Every structure is written in C-alpha cells, then in structure tokens.
Length: 198
Length: 246
Image (cartoon, rainbow over all chains, first blue to last red; front, side):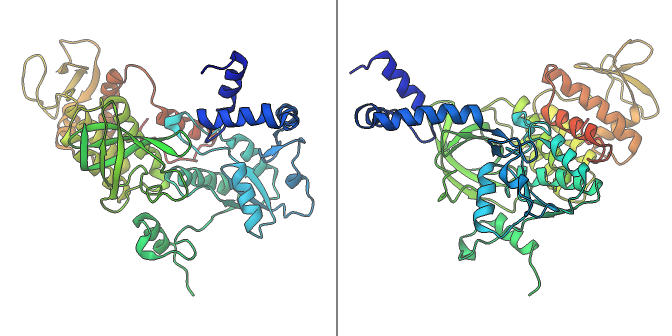
C-alpha cells in the first residue's frame, strides 16, 4: 500500500533518527498522527525552538542556549582544571559519575586526517586561545582510548606544555568487575604499562 | 567470495549505520578488502577494541559483492600502534595503501613490507628511514619500481661517485645528455637500492626521489596526512617532530 506524499515525507524525515528504519518510522508516524496529535505538535514546536536557540558555548564548545554554558559560567567550579573530551555525551558521563569539579572543553570529535578532520575542525585554535588566557593549571585529557583519541591527546598535551600547563591523561585498563581472561590483549597490555604502586 | 582466517590489518574504519563499521583492510592473499563489521559499535561487542588500525588480526568474511561481511575476527599478535608522536607516520602509510593499492589485488610482499614498517615505527628505528624503505618497496610491489642500479638509456651500471638526473617513469639518466629530472647522486641511488639510508644526505635525496615518484601515481591529489602535519606544524614551530614525510 502506498501513502500520501506528505506521509511519505514524514517517514523519510523520522528515519534521520538513529536506529529508526522504515518499520519504526511508520509506527512513530501513525502514533503521532492517530493517537497523540498534541504530543506531535509539541515535538514539532520544541524541535524548531531547540534548533534555533541551542548553539555552542563560546568557551567550551558544548551545546548551550546561552553564549556561555551553565558550567562555564558557574563561579563555584574549579577554573584551574580543564577536562578535554570528544563529545557532549562525554561531558554528561563525567559529570554524572565522577567528582570532577573543573571545566570542560568539547572537541566534537578527534583528529582523523583520512576523514578530513584536522586541528581546526576539533577547535584546537579555540582551545589554544583558552590556554593562552591563563589560569589553567592542569589539562585532563579524557579522549577515547582509541589510536586516534590517543594521538589527539598527544597533540593537545604538547600544546599545553608550551603554555607551561601540566597535561594528564585519564587511566585506561581493566574494567571494574571484569575478568582478565576475557580482556583483549591491547587493553591488558595498557593496564600493565600503567600499573601503580599499592 | 570468501576469506578464512586471513592475516590482516585494518587501514581505516568508518561508522556505518547505527552500530556497524565499514573497514578497509589489507591482507596478503586478497590485497585490500572492504568489509562490513555488523553490530561492533554496540556496547556488547567483543570486537570493538580489536578492529582498530595497527592491530595484527585474523579475519574471516564472506559476501557476494565488493564488500564482505565480517564473520570472525581474532587477534594475531601484539598491537603495533606507533607511539603518539609517530602516529601520523603510521597513518601516512595507511593512506598510501588506501590511495595506491586497488581492491582485490594480492601483494604478499606488500603485506610483509607493511608489517615491517609498523614494527620499525613502534621500535627504536629511525622514523624517516623506515618510511623511505616502505615507499621504495611499495613502488616496487605495485609495479612502479624505481630503477636504481643502471642508467635508463645506456644500461650502464650506476657509479656511486657520479651524479644523475632521475627522470620519473624512466630512471636515472646521464646528466650531460638529459634535461629535467631530479638530480641525485649515484651513492644515494645505490644506498636506496640496498635500503641503507643511515647517511643524512642520502636520506634527503632518497626522500626527494620517492616523494616525486609517489606523486606521479597519486595524480596530484594531496595526501591528507601530509596536510595535517603541515597544519599542526603551522600552529607552533615545535609541536610535531620535524618533517617525517613531507
């Protein structure tokens, strides 16, 4: 059976969401149009508003409605600690599960020359300006433990050293509650290289 | 088409759909291959950490078209990621293979050369020397080998004390009878042939030669790893160790 052109357009539009294929798109569309028109209207309005209003924080590049995000504007945070992460989701993860009270810088990715992602794309010029401003004592590199994440961290560490700032990298190794037998060799050898005295 | 526990290295990976990866891998018997690794980006996947560049792997896969579906991935040794300061050199090697090696074109010798350049980059060996030797071997394996032991026009053996003009896609020619080409000493030609590049002057000349030769086959499209190196170097004078590949 074929739907009206507008309905088809709605299906296509819904499929831009992650994990949404033709079947789920159809279910969502029917639900919005048949059972919850009020919800659909709200979704449409909020989406439009969010698109117009939410941009990136001037200082940390995280998503924000204001020019300076709530974290950067908070005077109670430790402004001498800067944690560098790859995505806004990483900021949330660190915020929710660690006692970190410093500030963030979001790269929105990592260096990946083969995909055309260089220093400008991940905002290194803005990060450098930030380091230049002074006041930061330690840069904590919390990029992903992949080869690219490690290389990105390396370049930022070099940059930090030039400004006399101490760069540190978060530890990586065996997950809590994990079993050594089932851990891949790379992780295990990293864990060994980064062992600590008890 | 099918591969069964084929030694392989991932050259590049790209996210595909929600949880899958598209891999470009190099193998000895099938050359460069495209593979789809389904579901590996999900939280539960065991292969997530494994399917990374510079990790020796054994891969199985099957499929009808250009892309194979990955069925098995096992590690085949210690990972060989170049240390962060040499990471770009590792990626540069990967980019060369991605650009110059056609898919499904077997080159067992090239796989060995790739393995040995990674080992050199992770070890104490001089970075530039390792890259030049790989470039020379890559050109030879692809059938664009440099002529390093005899003059192109007369066939006379190369003499270390003389200077030649290397004309790309032909070879070293006598300086008096040719115009153009790259000026290079006989000593450097012979040293590159023997893969003995310890001398700084020789290394510089070898770099000019391999770079120009690769340029012909790269058809003028710049290498992105070279561009990134240049961009990083522009940022600050000493952010990266000087000129490994450009």
